[in-house]
Amino acid sequence: MTTLHQLGEREVIRRLAKLLPGRADVRVGIGDDVAVVAVEGGHRDFLLTSDAVIEGTHFLPGAAPEQIGHKAVGRVLSDFAAMGGEPLWALVDVVANRDMPLKRLEGVYRGAAKLAGKYGLSIIGGDMAGGPELQLHVFGVGEIPKRSAVLRSGARAGDVIYVTGALGGSLAGKHLSFEPRLEEGLWLRESRWANAMIDISDGLATDLGHILEMSKVGAEISADAIPVSTAARKMKTGRTSLEHALFDGEDFELLFTVSAEKQPGFESSWKDVFKLPCTAVGRIVKAPRGIVLVDAAGKKKSLKDAGYEHFSG
Amino acid sequence: MTTLHQLGEREVIRRLAKLLPGRADVRVGIGDDVAVVAVEGGHRDFLLTSDAVIEGTHFLPGAAPEQIGHKAVGRVLSDFAAMGGEPLWALVDVVANRDMPLKRLEGVYRGAAKLAGKYGLSIIGGDMAGGPELQLHVFGVGEIPKRSAVLRSGARAGDVIYVTGALGGSLAGKHLSFEPRLEEGLWLRESRWANAMIDISDGLATDLGHILEMSKVGAEISADAIPVSTAARKMKTGRTSLEHALFDGEDFELLFTVSAEKQPGFESSWKDVFKLPCTAVGRIVKAPRGIVLVDAAGKKKSLKDAGYEHFSG
Image 1 (cartoon, rainbow over the protein chains, first blue to last red):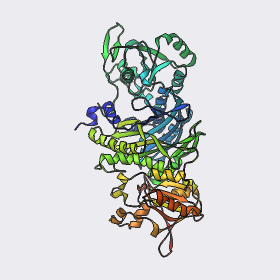
Image 2: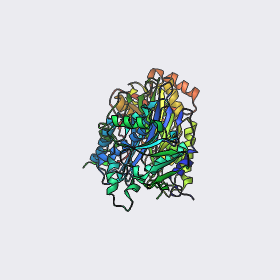
Image 3: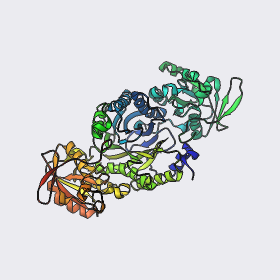
């Protein structure tokens, strides 16, 4: 019998999605950062997303409780950022060992509440159950003006590909302390700069792959242009720092495309508004469909997807 | 250090709720069956709820996959029923062992999709992660006309207390195959019969206790009147069938109160509309605050809460 491991997460999701009933008011279902639904009679769409944060997978047992809470809420906020949306409400399902000290769980909630409060997200419920290891499942509702969500499917040949911040090595600490790029995502949507957008949760290569797949295009990226983080440079894993920047997950930076003719205007506007770096790393091309990495000498090679996938590897 | 186990689920939730930031558009937060939020510009409120279904806690490893999916979606639908609401959309977080056969997970989704489809709930996303045992976290969004949700806090002294169906022994099978009482809940809300309502997930005594606590009243219930299920009568556990009906969780029947003057009208209307039995089991009283059980001889005794609580027992 075929196991989840043999198929891999993406194929499992594809198979399961086929079994599910739809509704006419669902604008974007399974396959983007968040689901988008129409709110009857209103001028807004709602954004629905959920993210799991599990001991042993998303953090180690020794992680500071405030950081676990920060990460759980941060993942959901980062999803909203990737659509250009604004957070509203959240529910949190907690699975915890019954012998866990209350103080530690309070620390988790303090970390969650601090980040939620900063961005106007109100945690208003959830469920609680006993289990061997700590898990947080955060369900978030956000909003966006009707039909204005920035989707993965909007990239067009010729678009310039940008990333915020610096990439790679998030395991050294950033994966527990990242700042969700909500202000940047909101601005990119409101100013209509971004054609397509995603947050980097599975790694630049994998998440760019999601944009390419949904937009039915390819990409050429310049190895030299990719902003490699100090953490990635310091990693001693046998991988190069460029490989960390390309394939490490959980940077939670934004990856988006901007029409070529807007490039100069966009780059100067960005610098007027944000201190955070924003770097052009390549271009969307019509074909081939995958990612081509161009080195300093102009040599091209096809990039194989090697980001994080649950059930695999 | 105090552990979750020492405090018990309810007290843990009380402590954590204090740490969380609020928003002005939250009508009902932590402490009812679902959270109720105002939708700007619309004539409806949204209902948000989440429920966990975990291997070893909510079902045994050998359970039929379709029933696991049924239960996961059914718990959320039962929450909506308890407010008189209607389901809209859901996300599902799945935690699964990587060696799980795809066929089994497809069975889970088939069960979830079947029940969801029956009641117009569309599953439109979620998250997936690896873990030792199977877990489903279902996050549901429902709707209700503005400010019309039937809350736990609406019971008044003199109200008649009703339950649908028959209670107890759900572990024998009903906990995996129950029908969420959505039609009944919707009718009770639309016809304005119910003053307060809850679904029986933790046991009649515990869930009635929730209504009493939120409504700041007490209750007298008649031992003889409680509808005891056949399954409860067949249980060989050392507990009486009445104890099963009072304390077993996961019946997912509705428990609600109706103003005394409406009793005759309500009872005849119910019979006109539903085949499902609906039984008067007692009355709301001003004091004492707890539950008093009255036996056939008229002898009264105070009922100690002995329903299911996570982290305890």
